[in-house]
Image (tube, rainbow, N blue to C red; front, top):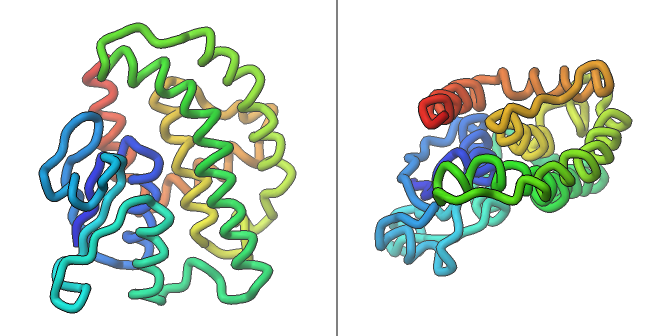
Length: 220
């Protein structure tokens, strides 16, 4: 199975971490950021990453899909164990909420910082809108961290007192803030800082984030 994209995307990173935690073998093929193979464009008609291919899985034809949530739904159905999306109605709903919170609210705010401070100057070779990045950091990020600080259980996992997709989805965007030199203030948000550090220290994230950080450092 092939995941198309670059792990510097929080959505690609989430899919790769999910596959790792499920012990599903996938191959990452570079795509996105203006590049990619014809196979990537076939799998992602709007050229968004991640995209996905499972060769021969659809009655002998390749199954292709794009969007991280759709990919995760496919993988979770095909490989139900270990269970990272709980079966109970309440816990499943909470996991879906946290993934949506991460994909829209968190990435929406964090993305303004990451795009304008990193993507625009490093990949697009133009100055980003630093005022927009500063405004997001000052006005949009603190309420997100306040929410997490109030809702992280003592177990260190967001739902069901165990690792779920919720944790992978919420932790992933924080890596992009780290790449911009923005860390969670552990004095103001101690539970959130400890939570993010613990989830990102898992093998599903650690090596991937280290590789990304090396690339980011080389581009400095």
